[in-house]
Image: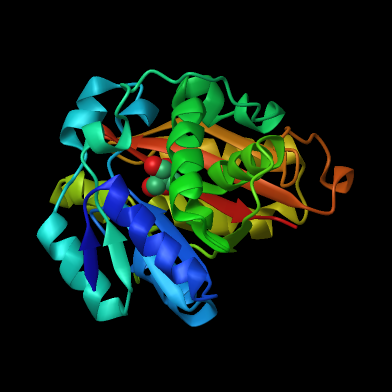
Length: 282
Ligand code: PAF
């Protein structure tokens, strides 16, 4: 596996690949890789001639400096896992390499209303930072396909809107959530949980899965309330938001009949660690 650190080496790698008529599958990551990331890499390896993984903790998408400072990093282990998974190359630039003119964005991305709800409300500026780094990665890597995990359900919708408004020619491929055996959605942030917190964190998925059954004979608002009450009753847990939304617009629904595509999106603080998850109702 080739390790690429600079934009000029990346451009040479991408240029040569495309000149040879090969397709590139890009997996953008912030490192601290786990089986969820590796399932994206597996898809990229299967679908494309060349699989390129970026490992870059993007400072512009963190609205909380402590969150950025404590974000888990383990580059050596990441490279080992990527080589084992069969990735062709990894692009792991420094912040200066990625943002040679500074991290200040020179452009406001049109991300649609999907960026204004949920994470958009609680993490102001977050999606502009995601759009800034992902659009730069798309420009540099020129992928045929790019792979994103469905744990970040809203992020996928926002990136699709960005691709459309910026006229970028790339297929966005969503990949299902990977879970631990006890149901907890895999996330780099799980490494920050204490043992006690890790033991109770699966309750997020347990409550969401239970709510799918419950929703069959209860209203949207009763289903919402039962999830929030159940999770808030668990030690260390505090629901930041739980919204039951139309899976296409991400706007809240009030009735189950309102849309053929309904998803519940949740963010929970487990101690100081912010965990996100979602569940499909329809
Ligand atoms: O999902 C992530 O890990 C990040 O938001 C991404 C897409 C790699 C952009 O930094």
